Length: 114
Length: 116
Image (cartoon, rainbow over all chains, first blue to last red):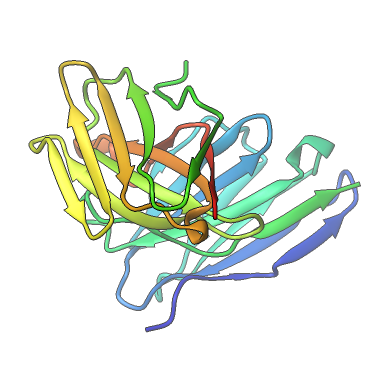
């Protein structure tokens, strides 16, 4: 059974640019969540999509956005990149019907903004 | 407002001994608690979870204990092995529907080192 796949693994962007990250969840999982990990703030929730609808959103500025497609694949976009956006971005998938399921994480996309 | 706290940044134990990782929370609405293990440059790997209606859950060498009155949970690893060396994150979810879906609130993590 394939796991959660995130692409690309590494990315270097210049301040002011925008970036799109992709996540393919485990087959059959309808929920995709996104997290940002930084040394100072730890793992912080960005947003969650279920059946193409955003169900929940964390405390991040509007520059951070996402979407989910009918096949449950998800993308997140960050516009007008800032140096502070440098982080490991993690995607997690779950069936989406219970909080008790261990959300399965991908290996992440390491974004560096220069 | 840090709703999930892991007060010990690091823990060092000898191979074969017990590792105890602790986690405190403040939000009474949390109804599921999870532990994840993470290696650098990889995503967290799910270890074990516990519902708020239970006080103990066991899976092989891993046992999680929940003390709701103290808002405290712990992960016991027995016996500890060098391969257990990693960062361990405690996480909580409040699956009350509505705006609670899909959000895990993580602690800051504890670096566990198991010495041979």
